[in-house]
Length: 178
Image (cartoon, rainbow, N blue to C red):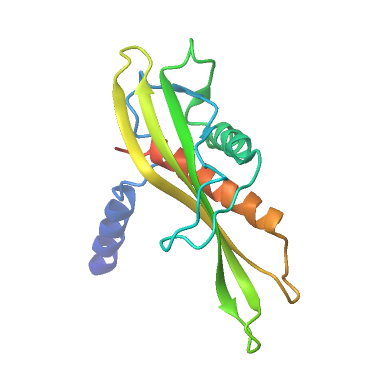
């Protein structure tokens, strides 16, 4: 009987001290954010090289990314989204790459599955001091989708999923410890 009680007490102590939290790891004074419009730095006229066989361009992608990141902060609820003048932090981003890559082929060498990959460069600033808190190059969101079969979707759906994934990852990067 005493062994069971000791085991129950130890289990309770371990469960209570697991360290899991749903709150932000940001300092309390950094309680709000402004997301500047992402800037599209992709040059659709850039020449193809041996390092990259094709260049892909999706008009307005930078606007979709901006909206996704803002929606992500609203959904997350750790930071209030405010105007630049009222926010404690400012997030700036540049769209630097958008790729469509085949992932799998059928026996006749037709593409069955594609991957959409969106890459941005990010900078987070403290509004009060103007100091750069952190920056990250080549931050990526992606999705994969089927082109045929019962789960087939369109390129637009692949882009939508990749933008959503990128937005969620950006929010996690800002809210979690640096």
